[in-house]
Amino acid sequence: MKTLNGLMKHLRDKGIDIQGSPQKRKLKNYGYYHGYKGHRFVGTATNCLNITNFDEAIALNEFDMSVKALLYPCVMFVETALKNYTLEAVLVDAHSYSLDDIFSRTLVAYRDHPKRTQGYREAMKKRLALRSEINRLIQYNYSKNAIIDHFYNNDKSLPVWALFEVMTLGNFGVFYSCLKRSVKLNIAHDLMLPSNFDCAGLLERLIFSLKDLRNAIAHNSAVYDVRFKRAKVGGQLGQMLSAETGVKEIDFQTITDYVILIVYLLRRMKVSKTECKQVIRGYSTSLELLRSSLKSSDYHKIVKTDARSKLRQLRQFVSDSD
Image (cartoon, rainbow, N blue to C red):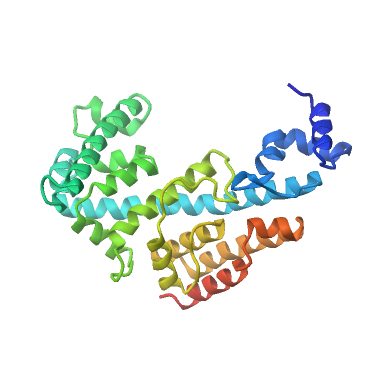
């Protein structure tokens, strides 16, 4: 276990120029991992940045923090809205708030497949796993959540909207995947997603992609190099976004593409053009600050050369959108 002075010497031994009280205080505030070790590479530990000054490491950390601060309210808004769009479609289809009714009438994606096929079996296993996960969620939140307590302490059936209050985005993604296709299509239509793509399926990928980003932000993990990505985004989601926004080459290999996804969803949810442009402007400002703080070679390992053109095309999409 190294002291603060020991950590400074350790960094100097690694070729990082760090000295004086201001940088010592920054190292104390940020810590060794967030101050340097966790931000010395892009994507994988083998793709190292050429950081030679502690201020460069801090600039990268501050860029990462500014992006998380910008995107977190947006992701939370989108999560809540997606749950509400889904809740409405489920209630219309099931004609009931009861989870038992919803399971028997609406959470039946397995019926979209012929019996005894691989798709049928996989959908059925997912539905059974969802039931177990819902029971676990309720058990975990009983005596911790006032809404759950109210219904169970009064021997009332838990309505689906109360369940949504304790669901993580990952739980919600599984719930969505278990919905029958007609309900998924109604949600996609309500969001005004294009009908010439399989948006019922793409929405599931979208939810899990947002889940990875949300978890990284919530746990203060790095997002600048999308190392948080766990879900298979797939090329079709990028193709759909490109077709809709006019932004080319969307592959979710950079955080810029996640900004595009979020702004697109915000407009589809009728968030004002002004607010969407503020998100783009905030991200652009963070990029320019990072550009002025890092070597050009390091900057372009993190931010691809097409970032400015992508943001320009995104602004145009926002301006032209209904």
